[in-house]
Amino acid sequence: MPNQESVTLPSIAFLGAGSMARAVLSGLLRPGVEVAGDIRATNRSAAKAAELDAVDGVVAFATETDASANRRAVAGAKLVVVAVKPAMVPDLLREIADALEPGAVVVSVAAGVTVETYESLLPAHVSVVRTMPNTPAVVGRAVTGVSAGSRSSEADLALVVSLFETVGDVLVVPESQLDALGTISGSGPAYVFFLIEQLTATAIGLGFSPEEAAVMVQGTFRGASELLAHSGDDPAELRRRVTSPKGTTERAIAVLEEAQFRQTFDRATAAALARSRELAAGA
Image 1 (cartoon, rainbow, N blue to C red):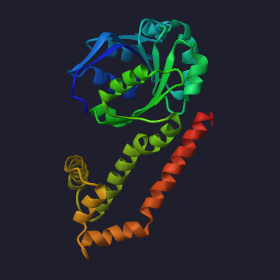
Image 2 (image 1 turned 60 degrees about the vertical axis):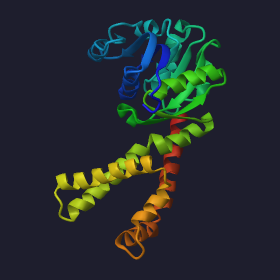
Image 3 (image 1 turned 45 degrees about the vertical axis):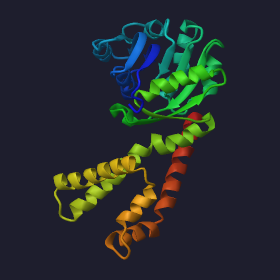
């Protein structure tokens, strides 16, 4: 949690308790975070809802056994986090619309669903803030993009920023940039894991055991990230320090440059952005 100061948040409801919602919920249970009121959560599965209900400070409802679960969860909640699959969002919003408290802030973590969609289905007394966290939220190292809706106030936005700061860093951006942000920080962990996967395979090809390869590659990525975080230096400068003139690393970097590594990332993120727009259009 980057901000170590204590934070107080109002009552919160999570509609849908998948991995991302659970990660954010875990941030609310950390020392220094106080929720004035309670935390409610809904899940389709009664078994998973029971698991959540067993967590101190959390009241959970199962939609498979309680048709009014979502409406019960949002009653009186100031923050309502919508964390269901994107295709489920419109029906869910219609279901809870008249149960939301005046002044409630509805927070979207559903990829591709626009603020306009939310605002068209919710009453005028409710504001909307769209967000895009990433999976390192599970370990408190998320990067979350946050975009204000047309009805959200500065106070509403600040409240949502405080919520996501419990699990990492937050960037406030216009909604027009949120999908692009998703191609970097949202999809970015997969890019890192892919690089680790490929370099590990290369190490194994050089004769190391899978265990030895994992130690080398994962330790190198972890160490490089920590060095970058603590040095305060630009990554290009840190790379130059490793790349001795006419040395082995310089030769390897030249091969990567010949393969147009930068342009490959440009094409990859462009493809991800195009798909995000397709999903938003219902394709």
